[in-house]
Length: 144
Length: 387
Ligand SMILES: [Zn+2]
Image 1: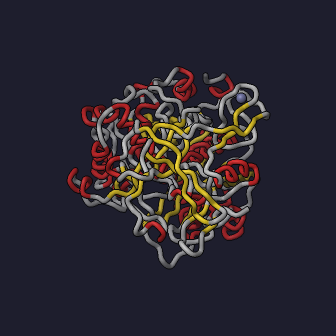
Image 2: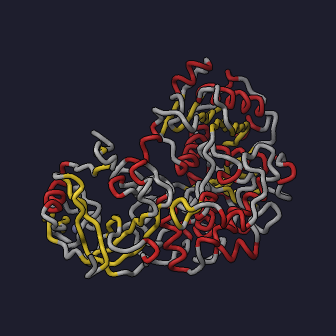
Image 3: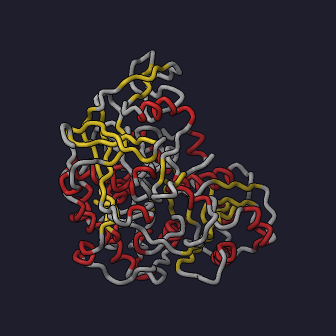
């Protein structure tokens, strides 16, 4: 299995869409955030996976998330690890705790890196990387 | 809790030979460096390669079988894992258990790696979306092992106060120790200003919060305690150990409770069951004369102090400032300068320093009356070495 895919026109790394994650990626193309909710304990599993780490059940339903959350943590990349980021540093990487519980790692759009704070209220936004790949991101709630 | 079975293998194996090569070797292969390290450790032990009947390594330049083919060593116990700092102490533990069980008489743990060579398994690590141990996610620009300690440090300072600048107390202290170490790669003194002027890598981490990245080789030879007593150097007994604690609550380069990725948020204080290494070694924490830890990034020095209860949650910076972690401090940590300043041989050089301190071979950086060295890390894995 490929461990990385690079967009040849931009040099950006594209996400690998693992087969069992396809409901997530298909919903992302429609700008909807869905994750697996356990049919037994009702918690949302994350990262996406084959079983519920909270109760061990293998039964789950892909469910719509609110898309709202809070910045639980962030760091700022100053070193461009690959050429794509040479003109894009500094950029923020955030871990957003969504209302349903899990923490998702994304970038934060619509705010300068010096204004990112733990506790900021954010909501999902979507970044179309290629015609077939739309990536979940977050932005300040009510922001652009 | 340390079981009777664990206590029964206390002091049954010992380190008898060590070596570390750190630097820039443009004309050498990783295999050639590994062989030299092996020969240096044999000399250190006063052994011949025919005395070795076990080999252990984590993936590196050449695999274990290629190494054995090159050196003509025949073994009856070979093991190879994947290079990660958290697996070095379990490898030493496995060697000690293997020897205690009589499955091998003398085991060489061998490492050799070029830092700019391709085709090594670790080269792929930072691109492993959804699989890597540091939160890697390349589509978001989330690359590199420094990500995990940066996330941890950010939460640490958010929860307990302080700022990224405080990590300078760790880096300058370790550099001061490195100035006393002839084989350290970084011997130029580092002031707090030098530290603060180093560039951001992943904020809150600066360049000087990140370890050296150098060509390296190392070898650690273990044998039975009985046999070690007949060899050239004073035995360094493996007195107690405990394993890597892992799970959703134990993200890499992070203390439990800091809220990195899916971790719960709470203040971690070690309970008795988190500290059975002391019981197995039949010592108490207060008997520890110095600590060695896998300081790939400076925040983990804070975390090891809190993980084993040398100070309370959020108190590590104050502990470092008031007690001191230098060679003459109340609790010396990484007296060699560690991976931050001595150099990086996948961490194996940290065990060479354990041995040198316990043999009294550490020269100007010798810790006075050093009898108990604890190797330990934020994930809870630990070994108590004694002389
Ligand atoms: Zn469940």
